[in-house]
Amino acid sequence: MNANDAMRAMIEASGKSGRQVAREIGRSESFVSSTLAQGVCPRADTLARVAEVCGYEIVIVPKDVAGNLADGSGRIVVEYDGR
Picture 1 (cartoon, helix red, strand yellow):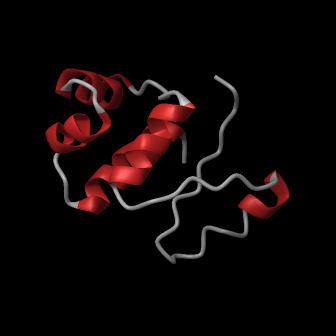
Picture 2 (cartoon, helix red, strand yellow):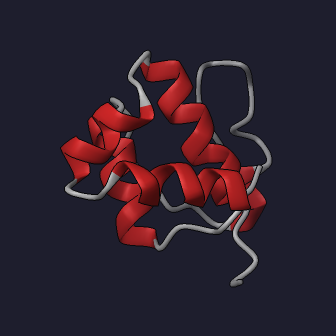
């Protein structure tokens, strides 16, 4: 899953609207909706703020460990390719 998909999944799982999340992270609703619609990779600090308001936490692990984390436990595993 990429960062954009993760942002979408966290918002959906939280039950909050994009408008609510935007307000809570201090961004405009159009920023959140256009980021999701255009498939833009959010900056790490934006993704972390979205995670926090949606009840998630960002944890960075080595690549060889990340593949073992997608076990259906509600975790969202993001693979970041640097773009």
